[in-house]
Amino acid sequence: MHLVLSRVDGGVLATPLTDSGTPQGKPTRIAEPSLPAFVAQHEATGVRWVWDDTARWYPAVLAAGGRVARCVDLRLGHRILRSALAARGSALQQAPAGPWDQAAPLERAARPAAQTQLFDDALFGSGRADDAADPVDELRAQLAAVAGATDPGALRLLLAAESAGSLVAAEMRFGGLPWRVDVHERLLEDTLGPRVPYGVRPRRLEEIADVLRARLDDPALNPDSPAEVLRSLRRAGLVVESTRKWELQQLEHPAIEPLLEYKRLYRLLTANGWSWLDEWVQDGRFHPEYAVGGVVTGRWAANGGGAMQLPKAVRAAVIADDGWKLVVADAAQLEPRVLAAMAGDLAMASAGDGRDLYDGVVASGAVETRQQAKGAMLGAMYGATQGEGGRLVPRLARAFPRALELVEQAARAGERGEPVTTRLGRTSPVPEASWFEARNRAWSIEGTPAMQRAVESRARSWGRFTRNFVVQGTAAEWALSWMASLRTRLAARWQGPVRDGAHLVFFVHDEIVVHAPAADAAWVAEQVAAAAVDAGRILFGTFPITFPLSVSVVDDYGSAKD
Image (cartoon, rainbow, N blue to C red; front, side, top):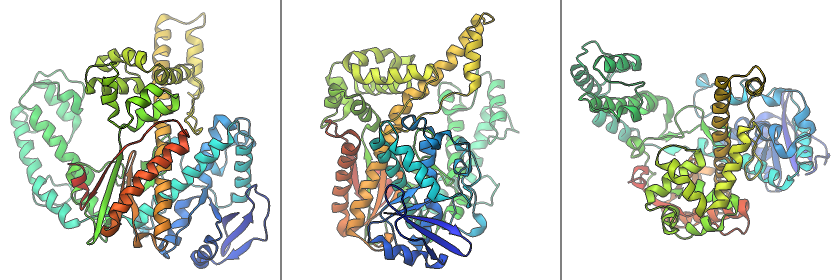
C-alpha cells in the first residue's frame, strides 16, 4: 500500500492508495507535529510512503527517533520519467511543464534556520515544487508512465533505487560524519600556520607568496588572482594559457614549484579551512548535504560543503566515536566492470574475475602494462583519440569487442543527436534545437567547409558525452543499489534510531563509509561486501561479473587511504 502525504491547511493529509493507484480507504488528517508518531504507527505494516521530496519530510521523522523502510520521492521520479526513452509517449511526458519540473528546496534542518538555502541545480531549473501540486495525481501519472513503458521492470527498479538513495542521503545528513574539530584545527595550523581573521593570508601562504614574487620579480603580485599570476608568468617569458595544475607542471621555471604549493594550500584554506569548519561542523559531526541524482548521469552532487570531495589533508579529522569504528569500502574499477556486464562481454568479465581488472587486461595480451590498460580503458569510456590512451584503444577493441562496441554505438548515437540510456533506463538529454539547426545549415547548399568542421567537432563532443553517459550512469545505479541493500541489512539488525546502530555516514561515487560499533565492525564489513553482490545481481542478473571491494576497518578515515 502507498500512503501519500501532502500538506494541507493546518496539517498533513495521508491518502491510502493501492499499488496501482486506486483508493484504499479514506484519507487521514494529521496535525503536523503528530506526523512522526503516525509514521511509526504505520511503518510496521510495510507501507510505502509517498511524498514530494524526501528532504522535506523525512528529517522530522529522523529527529523523533524514527525511520522508514521505503518511500516514493515524486520529484526524483518525475525527473527520470519526464525524459525516459522507455516511457516516451506517456501522458506524463506530453504534459506541459509544471511545478513538478521545478527543483525543490533542501531544507537544512541540521543547521540554523537563518542559513537555510534553496536547492540549486542549474541543470533541472530552480525554485520549488508547488505545495498545491497534488501528489496523488502525480503518483498516478508516474504509475501509468511506468506501466506503459517498454521496459517497466527496469524503470521500477530505477525509481525504487533513486528513492532509496533519497532516504540514505537524508539519514547520512541527519547522522553526520564524525569530525574532530581539534584535530582539524591542528592540521590547519601545522599546514598553514596560526589561525588568522577571514580575508587575511595565513603565515605559510604569505611566506610562499614572498618566494613566488621574488622568483617572478613581481613584488606586487597577488597570487590569489589567476589573472595576475598568468600575466606575471608571461612577463617571465613562459608560454602559458592558464594556471591549471596540469599545464603548470609542463613548465620549467623556479616559480613553478612554489606556485603549485601555493595553489594546493590555498585550495585547502578556501575549501576546508577554518571558515568551512565553523559553518559545516556542529556537535562533532559534518552533516553532508547531497543532491541525489544532481548530475545528469544520476551521480550525486553536493549542495555545498564539498561532500563529494574531502581532500586527504583533512581526512585524519574524521575519527570514529569512542567504542566505534569506521568501515570504509570502495569498489575496484567500477566503471569498466559495469561496462563489461552491460555489454555481456565475457572476456572482459573474465579479465576481472578474482583479480585487478587492469592486470587481467595485461594478461589477455591486449597491452603490456597495467598503466597502459588503465589508460586504454579510460580512453574507451571517455572517447580519447590522442595520446597513449587513444593509441591503445584499437588494441583493447580487438581483445574486448563487445564492450568497445557498446560505447562506440553510444557515441555514434550522441553524434547524431539521439538519446542513450543506462541499464535501468535513465535517459540522456539531447542537444538543443540550435545544435540541429546549425548542423542542417552546415550541410545545406549555403554551408561551408568551416561550418561543417565546426558542427562535426560539436557532434564529436556530444558523442563523448553519450559514450560515457551509459557507463557512468549505470555505475551510479550500481552504487544506489549497493547502498540500498546495505541500508536494509543494517536496519534489520538495528531497528531503533539511526545513530543507535551502524549507519551510513558518507558516500562519494564508488566509496562508502559506515560508522559502526567496534564489536560489530567485522560483521558490518561482511554486509558491505554482500550488498555489493546484491547490487550486481539486481542490475545484471546471473551474468558472471564480480565487483570486488577494498574494505578497511579503521579509527580514522585518513588511515583507510594510506
